[in-house]
Length: 135
Image 1 (tube, rainbow, N blue to C red):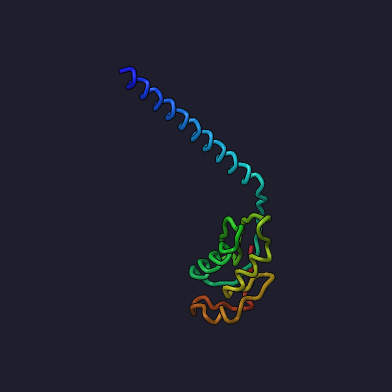
Image 2: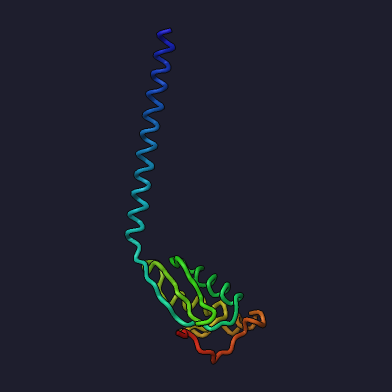
């Protein structure tokens, strides 16, 4: 009987030690995540992007979001303007302009790829003189 009680006690002691270590590791992981988020330098920008419709919106936002460091992108169909939030330690505004242009859409700073523009659906082939970044 003493052996059984001793065995149970040893097993419980090991289990408690294990739980304490797991809790400590979890706490350390959480603290590390917090430190990483504090080091991020988020920037918000807005700029004009030509386009016509909901399909354009999807393509433009997907292109912007494909850039490493971009947290969010929202293109306004009516205003022809995109709002982007990104980590400026990982990317910059010009990289976002270039990614959108590569998908076939003109931005305020970079002309869209003509080859990609030709592959856009008919409803997405916008007027290259269209006013963008409207208020």
